[in-house]
Length: 284
Image (cartoon, rainbow, N blue to C red; front, side, top):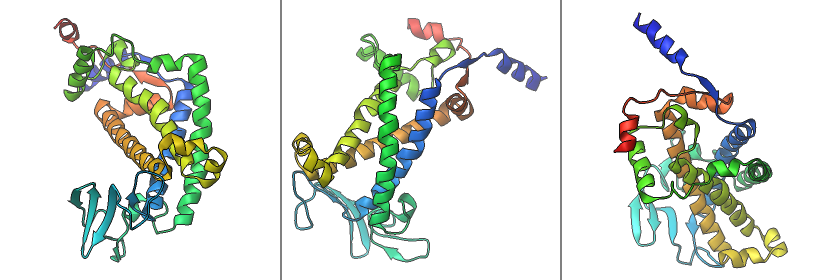
């Protein structure tokens, strides 16, 4: 009887349209593209695991970030901060038990074995899959009003509203009922920042590292303060994007992966039931 009642309660919740087709297609293209570019980018970084600011940088120069090894220990150094990473970064053993001194291990890179040329081919091919659909998605968002869905309102940007949403997420109290169909302020800030901030920054800094593109557009070096600065900003943007993906996947798992993934595959979403105390929380 309990199972039947539970099923009936589930059926009472409407299955509604949540994500438009263009959003879903772009999401899944990006899901594949970004992972391939992250992993091939780590292999490219392995060729010279040091980052600098300015126009020039090589082994004798002082790097602000370095991943390497000394003796039998791996490390990550950021400025004066030195963190041991033996067995994870800089000094690790591959699946055959062979010692490797590359920055990132094979399971995190494309290809798994060291090949700068292959990594560059992967990276540049998938860059087209990032840029072309990205530009089309931008145009669609601007002309079809989707950008308004991602733009925070003045009321949403008040400290009280943002802090309330932070507390609800910390307590795993996600929007329910009709509120679940709209982006909350944390989603708006993160999605808007990624779509119109991080992704364009990744593309422009990537172009800023290309001698051919810089020859055609020398203003790229002026924009970022040098090729090494562009490389550093590219790496930082990549790290922020990786952090966003980690948080995004965690939120999907906590909010209910079946319902969330179904909405991004079919566009249909089962509305979570309204909480009995939702009205009291609004008034509090």
